[in-house]
Amino acid sequence: MSARDVVGTVVGFARTLRAAGGTADPERVQAMLAALDHLDVLDPADVYWAGRLTLCADPDDIARYDRCFAAYFSGRAPRPGHRPPPAVTRYAAVPRPRADGDAEPAENLRAATASPTEVLRTRDVARLTPAERAEVDRLIALLDAAVERRRSRRFAPAHRGRLDPARTVRETLRRGGETARLRHRAHRTRPRRVVLLIDVSGSMAPYADALLRFAHAAARSGGRAVETFSVGTRLTRLTRELRHRDPDTALAAASAAIPDWSGGTRLGEELKEFLDRFGQRGLARGAIVVIASDGWERGDPSLLGEQMARLRRLAHRTVWANPHKARPGYEPLAAGMAAALPHIDDFTSGHSLAALEELARIIGGAHA
Image (cartoon, rainbow, N blue to C red; front, side, top):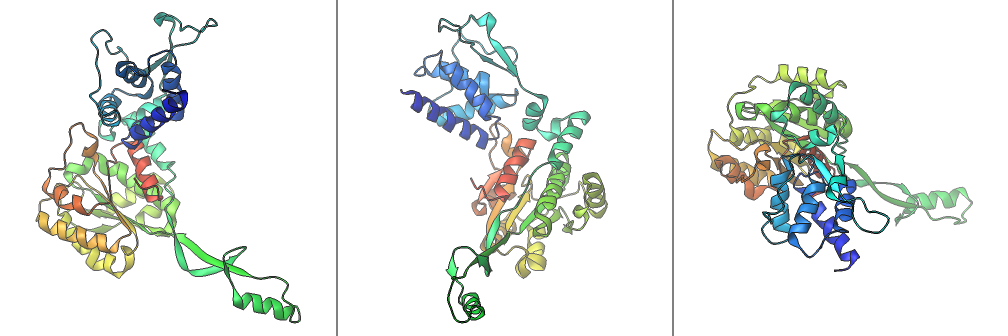
């Protein structure tokens, strides 16, 4: 295998790991490539451990890494008995080459420690300490959740594009009938509307605050193109409350406006109400609609399926963020989730800072 093939394979694997919520940034990819320089790239065990020791930033990454390794390399992740896992999985061990070209002994390996921010990026927000939660809240507030732009029907002057006859004729008349320069026009672009429907029922209580903070970051980036509603036993519009510049003030206003916090879940009924009152009139037409929920439905699941099908006909894209999706062995068995799944374009998690960053990329136009 050539060096170019090795680089392409590792970069592709890192991209797969990032898509699954892993922390495989370019620096860690370089560390894996450096490790493979001293190993047999045709040995699955060598490749497995080179990646695990460099691409995993947190113990929670290991199960995700194993799944991605098995899927990407079409085989089971090797676990040779003579090479036990390291005691501290937060470190990435990379051999340091010596002047004679050989690798230094194992006791001289350089350990690259993951930064606290890197560790927090992949931690489930439901399992954070108060101090960690405060730091994640700060990082969510800094998210760039710029929305996707779409082409408008209206035109604007441009250096290239379609010929603009009216402006060209006016320019000619100003010059006494001499055509000196052709004028052009092109379609304007405008932000595509984003609608966030956030489940605030009891089963979503550990994640609702972080998701509302994400909605605030999206509203800050997308302005009036972003609409936010809470869903549970009632549908509540939170767009005005989340327009406060300060995240804590916005969250306090939103919490005060939500009458059914930590209550039950009637997703089908609430989605129907949204479509009847707001969606059919324009909010959902051509929009990216994000539903953040674990899919536990106390009402009729078939109603949720019908309304999801209706939503998909109106929306540009339907996205579902389920925090439980990140758990090992998760399957969408909840009745509501199973009914909605056939009508979803993007199914993501939203359980961590890294997952919220992925959600931001989706609403920005980087679809999976």
